[in-house]
Amino acid sequence: MDRSAEFRRWKAQCLSKADLSRKGSVDEDVAELVQLLNGREQFFTTSSCAGRILLLDGNINGFEVQKQNCCWLLVTHKPCVKDDVIVALKKANGDAILKFEPLILHVQCRELQDAQILAVRSTHGLEVPLSHKGKLMVTEEYIDFLLETANQKMEENKKRIERFYNCLQHALERESITDLNPKEKIIKKNNSYSRKKKRNREKACGKCVTEDNDKELENDDDPGVSVTIFPEDY
Amino acid sequence: MDRSAEFRRWKAQCLSKADLSRKGSVDEDVAELVQLLNGREQFFTTSSCAGRILLLDGNINGFEVQKQNCCWLLVTHKPCVKDDVIVALKKANGDAILKFEPLILHVQCRELQDAQILAVRSTHGLEVPLSHKGKLMVTEEYIDFLLETANQKMEENKKRIERFYNCLQHALERESITDLNPKEKIIKKNNSYSRKKKRNREKACGKCVTEDNDKELENDDDPGVSVTIFPEDY
Image (tube, rainbow over all chains, first blue to last red; front, top):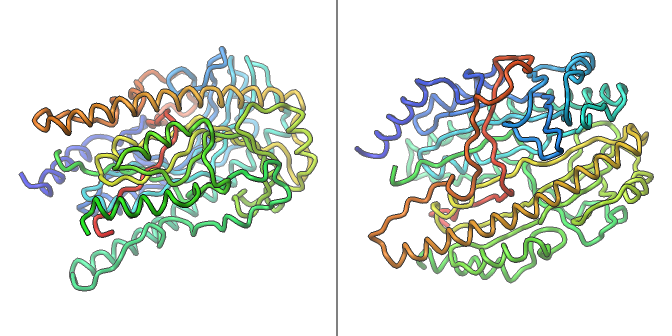
């Protein structure tokens, strides 16, 4: 069986099952993006989350909170209010942690070049311990402030999903045109529509840095999309 | 020029320059790992950070803190004490944020299959707003607790770097053996040594979840390594 046919078969198999997220379905805010990708032969999505605010109750031994040994006290894809969190916190026994996680999208790609289009990742998260062994370590005023920040990030996240969708749509249209006109080779760079422009590393405020010789690493600021490339020996 | 020769030339060029991090040199705790990779023909590292705790002073308009419009108040690759943070916080004008970032390693790979060995990412970070428009929003007791958490993550991060180094070393040795015995095809899976075993999604504590139908997404828990695959038309 040739590769395209194999990939089509694999795609059909996966899309006939539920989304790999525990919810088993696609969030409203990422539905269009998922549809855009799945509508193209060379992609299919496996798991997705539009972005969420969650409160986890971690292991009381203080070991790192991992999803399998913690309890989800609250999770929402919409703006969150302080009272929801206060109520949820009352159920915490260990170290409760509030997290904001932006878009996550797992995409299977048939070809390497398509993975290069999509290799983006976001960094605008939050991960904030709120209680220790069941004891609340912050004030309600802080929780209010924190949620305001988390809700702003959720809003920003939505805008980025939209921006990413538009960029991706244009990129895929350009690619279709190229396929019809193979002599016009358009070089697809990662930077052109899927990553923010590289930051000027020299702009960091030198006088404020305690360790003057420390580093600035490039980070991507777009929604998080993880890609897997269809292996040649599949 | 054939691909191997091109890649060798590109590698030599890049390694003759400084590490792409602003520091321009490789952190002690990641030096062995960098050396292991650069010692193999098919890889070279471009930018690295062993892991760090940092305090950023963000934009006072409340927009997202991005590296180019914020001030680095403190950065350390070693355990951090409360007094260091308190002193640094006094210099904050905007929204100060404490972050823990685990290992980041950018690796150029000659072949796709080598990128598959290395495609891992960590999720055990911290991102905690501490002040708002220059006003401290948490107690010193909280800062103490937070730093204890951050320092524990730093320790855990070191262990993971070591574990990743060992796994990578074994994987590369097995690959060398395979190259000598092409008839013995060893299937290199991502899971075998570079990712944690998939979590049992059913283990989540159902009764505690406010939105019972929400999701569990798979996350990698190993040190963060980002890969770029050497494009065919380079």
